[in-house]
Image (cartoon, rainbow, N blue to C red; front, side, top):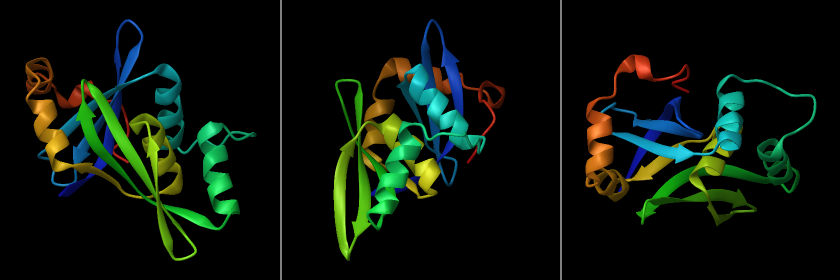
Length: 151
């Protein structure tokens, strides 16, 4: 079973990590994913609808997909194993669906550019809540901790 989510915001986690926070459409489930600075920048640019004079990597991927007459139809965060999240890009091309393995941060950055839905497998929410450290972090999360977004 899948739950549709939106990017709720980006947070800085010193000394050099960022967190992209996904929240279910109903607002009941929250999924923090730790990402790098470059990925946070790519997501932030998409959230802010910033258009640069030359395409960055995620813009290039989107453009290449469109040039071959394919379309990004969804992104799914599929798994959490040993503190690593996994994702799949779902593309349509000539009446066929193609699934491509991706890092969640890259998949999210592409989804925001392609304006396609992002989903999380239900068991991913459950597994991340089983992590006591993450559960405590989520309990202490306040609305003002989030950056601007809710895309």
